[in-house]
Image (cartoon, rainbow, N blue to C red; front, side, top):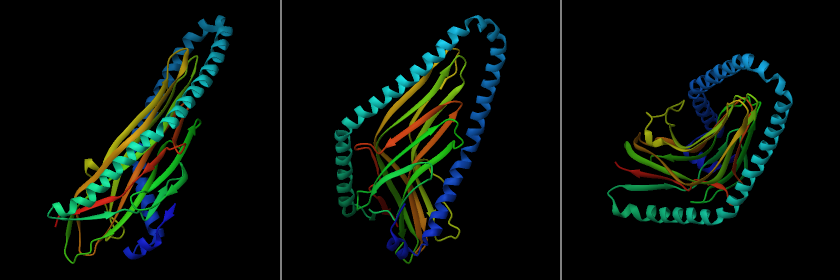
Length: 327
């Protein structure tokens, strides 16, 4: 976690209060996922019961094939090892290619910075650029391997691995937190925009077997949370669809008889925009904007997940939050 104490002090925000409120917000996200996870677990349990019932009738017929079944388990183990080697090779290839991809993303960021600097004189409203976060905060399920902070170049390198048995199904995220006070003695209506530049890799695997019922998957997203800090405890305005952008869903499934297992991997590279329109602040009102890289990770049965935004030129970048003061 990286704290800019001077930034928080100017805005009159207590560090402990801020981190506590962000933790509450993460807890809310996790509770919002509870219904989905409950339904997923219910479907998984139903599949397991169906599989057990089928095995009851099928296994006596398979008894003479026990030797072949053991050979198949050996095949599954070998397939699992080969698949892990394959996606490690895929990741290594991406690491080798990512400098050119990263350079393209960086060029895009530089262009957007120039546009933001030139836009203010062309419109009838003012722009405020928050180019340095007050705080960079990962949740406990991911590893923040490195970070760097400077105007328009706020980066983080993170990674995570989840394997079965996994009691931590749910949500983790990395937050870039920015603070702004309305300087006017009147109400202000503003548009808030930010974006994440992502360059990384994820993989999922579900173990095979004679009769497996295994599933593992990711859901990755970018989001913008807006806090009305002039209220205590802080409140949030009504949600808008532009606050969230789904980045990737990667999952692996093994649920057939004599299934050797399933493995999926994906590169995540691009710029992802998030925004909030017509946000209203009172005179001297303080707002907190949290730009988040969200990671939904779920494993049912036996399998695993790997997320890498740390190797080579892999990284997560949040350059700035741009505020357009409309009135």
